[in-house]
Length: 145
Image (tube, rainbow, N blue to C red; front, side):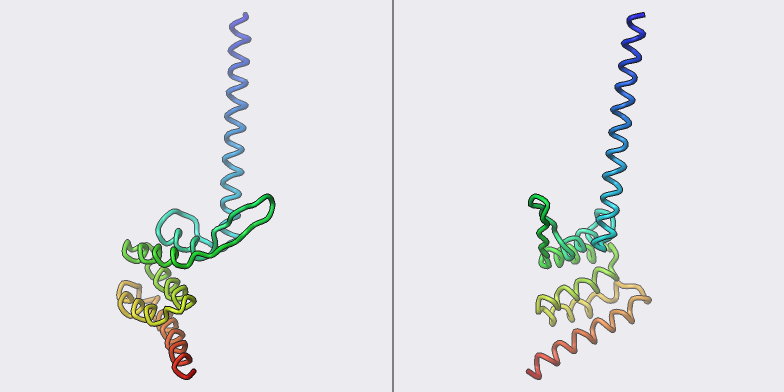
């Protein structure tokens, strides 16, 4: 009889631990999904997702305050990795050009788009044309000044 009580107690403890672990995992997944929604970054772990995380923000927490830093140089490295590995090439090329423009690397952005647009879908070509137009406008503005 004593062994039956021990088994019930062990089973009860195991069930409680499994339930707690399961609920913690669900909460973690929910928090992770909310992070992606709030910060408008895609889910996953590929080079494009890493680039978007670096482009958007890297959050550091001090007590309850949040310090937000952008890391565009790292984002460009990850965008190149995404393009070269075939991971969301259309989006990676467009997003990389935008980040390069923000860093005053407009000519490099133009060369990247012109050189790698052949890797992008037909559907993305018009959007890439618009990116190029925007980049050329920046160059024209710099020449005028």
